[in-house]
Structures are given as C-alpha cells and as structure tokens.
Image (cartoon, rainbow, N blue to C red; front, side, top):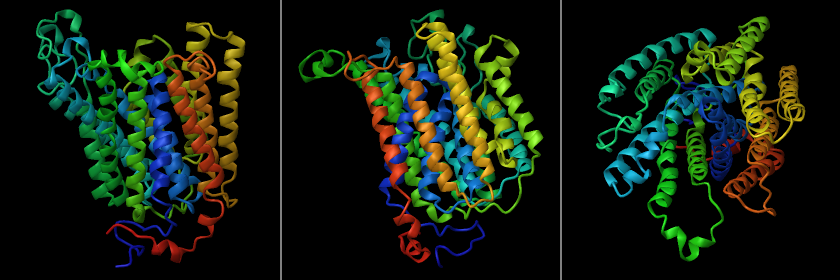
Length: 494
C-alpha cells in the first residue's frame, strides 16, 4: 500500500522528511535546556518550559506545511500535558539512590532507579500522547476533551486507591509499591523520615485510559505511538540520576587526580539537564519514525468557543494559577496544585479556542516563571529593586509575549503558516527563558569566578545558540522547495 495514501486511522503526511539528526539533536537541545531551567522553577509550570520548547522544535521541523492554528494547538497540547506529571514527588525517590545512609545499598539504589523510570515514563508519556493528538490529524473538540478529562479523573482516583494507598505514616503504614523514603530501607529511622504521599499510580491509570481512548477509540495512530516514545523518553530520569548518584557514591574519587580539575558542578541540575535531553531526543526520534502518521493539519472548522468565553477562561486560569503559586490561601493551594486540575481549563480551551493556543504558548506559560523570578530576585534575595525587577521580569516580557500572541492570531487566513509560527515562537521563548534563568543564576559570566551554576549556564548557552542557528537557517530554501514526490521517496517505517 502507498505509505502516504488515505487510511482509516487518519491522513498520512506528504511532508518532506528532515534528516534524522535534526529532530533528535535539536529536540535534545530544547529538552536539555528547558528541563535544566525547570530545576530553578519546579513543579508543573516549570516543566511546561521544556514541553513548550520541544513541541516548538518538532512542529517547526516535522510540519512544514501545517496551517497556523493546528500547529499552535499541537504546541499548546504538548506544553500543557508535560506539566501534568509535575504532581509526582520524586525528591525522596532520588534520595534512595544517593543519601548518605543508603550509600552502598544496591537494592535501595535499584529500587530508586526503578521508581524514577516509572515516574519518568508517566511524566513524558503524557507529553507524547497529547503532542501526538495535536499532530495526528484527528480533530478533538472541546467537548471531546471535557469527556476525556472526566474519564481521566475517575481513572486517576482508581489508580491512586489501588497503587498509592494505604498511606498512614504516623502508623508506619505505606503502600505496597512505594518509591519514597520508607522504613523498609531505613528501619532505624524515626518520625524524622517524613514519607511523602505518592500519586504516580493515579497518573499512570489516567495516562493509560487516555492512551486507549486516543489510540483505539479515536483511532489516532500517532498519539498511540508517540505516547510510547514519550514513556521510553522517561528513561532519561534514571540516566540523569546515574550521573548524580555516581558522584554521591564516589566523593573521594572527585578529591584526587584529574577530577580535581573539574569546575564546581551542580550535579542535581546536570541530572535534570540530562533527563531533558534524553526526553527531547526520544520524542524527536519517535516523531521522525512515525512521520507517516502526521496529519495534514489544515484548519477546516472554525473555533467553537466564543472569544469572550476564551478570555474569561484566561482570566480564571491565570488568576487561580497566581493565587495557587504565590499565596498561602489554603483552598487555592489545594485546588490548583494537582497537574490534572491545572491542565483542565487549558486543554479544553485550546481544543475549542482560536486565541488560547497562542496565549498558552506565550504569555500564559510565562506568567508563573516571571513571578517566581521576581520572588527570588526582588523579595527573597534583594538582587534588584522592585521597580526594575517588575519592569524587566514581568511587565515587559508579558507585554511582549501577549503582543506576539495577538499578532499571530491576526495572521490567520493570511497564508502565514505553522512552521513560521513555530520558528518565531521558538526564537522568542528560547531566549526569554534562557534570560530568566541566567538572571536566576546571578549572571554567571564565564570570565568571572566560576560557581556551581556556571557550567550549566554555558550548556544552556550552547543550547540556545544551537536552536537560534537552526531557526535562522533551516526550512527556508531547500526543504521548502522539496517536492511531494521527493518526500514520498524518503524511507518510511513499515
């Protein structure tokens, strides 16, 4: 059968295929920088940086003929979805592989690495699934998304009850399958152990349910396959932790010989950077291998949500996000903390809206990062004054990204394509988040005295320069002129 012919599983792409190295290497650069930057900002909203940058890279490279709105919608889906896994606790899971009390305990190390692999697979599995849903050519309405999310909440509760309960640390009662600090590994510990509640089982059930719905009920082959590649990408979590735990287990080695010439290293941030690079590379490889299932991404139906409703939802979501992130209001903290709840309004609004995909990819993702930067620089460490801090790290970036989002929306119907959106949004976002993080790192210029942050800042600089060169050089001449016949000649997996 012609690999580009119509299929009951959805339209198959006739897009020119870039060389394999491009989506793998460039998505690795985007993921490594994005996840490394996430280390300073944390949780769901921090993870969205990496999801945004990787999704923009892959849409830019793999969807040269996509229409504007479907391309933005795919980017927004990938950005939102990667934040869902931020609900999972993992600090104590990492602790099983490196805290002093467990150094030399290979069973604890192996158990911790297994836990990181499972949590990583769930985390990046969501990103692969929803990015695939955005790129697969199957149109998901806001009503579809609403029903899907309700089903995911039910499955989340079931998985949490089956795999993450019982949890009564006061009585030393923990779930049978538990990847955080427990008395099994530290039987002599007392109340200071403080085990943390886990939710990976709930998220795993929610992911599997959404995977079945998208891949078999909606017959979206790309979503089905890319979710699996995302889960494979989760192996970056234990791979990155191998570096950090090697340092923790062999500190004496780093105090002698050639190792003494290493600059100061933030091993935790290198773990995160490695995780992001592996995650991005796997998603890039998975999408390249499954490029035959990328849809035509032509917008054939108008947005179904009225603009007034869209902007109302923007106000509700951003307000709850700010209250939940930056206040001590108990109900807001509880309501807008779980990743599935944070994703609820955005997924529905992106699926049905014309404004939301662009707003999500630009100012909405930026707002909590800007707020955390101001909190650190202005109020916690007094690095910069309130007026200058708010102007440089909130007012100007939010105005810039909002203006960019409005400009992109106004290009609808003008022939402005999804590739150009991804190119320009990637350039803007990559430099914005690099700049925010560089300020958070206290501007570790390499000609000044090196700190533990300097090597990571240099790595992020290499990433942002690499992405910039790609945006300025790729897809302007040769790839745009490649004919559909040449694209069909590119090898495709069976």
